[in-house]
Length: 132
Ligand SMILES: [Zn+2]
Image (cartoon, rainbow, N blue to C red; front, side, top):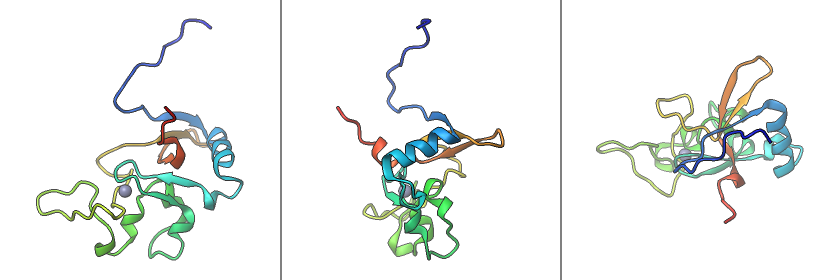
């Protein structure tokens, strides 16, 4: 050890940076080989979703599972706004319409792609549950 930075207590854990390979390995370790079964958690409403949940939804693709909350692709009555303003749609039992592509950037992890770019993604579902 060379006296690197120690973890600092924060209210919110900073997004973990990882390589694409490390991210894939973690997904496989947690949920198995099939990425369609990997579960991600929305940082705003806590909805747990997998790519399979997005199949058959209008305008959705499997990649949305780690970038957009499921509520973006559901009818108004079955979703809620991520950040409801005055008169906004509050529907707490439903997935919200949060996207990492919007104004509020709350990634669960940042993955370094093979193209050298960094991609923000939702965290894997069971990472959000702290074990004591
Ligand atoms: Zn959400």
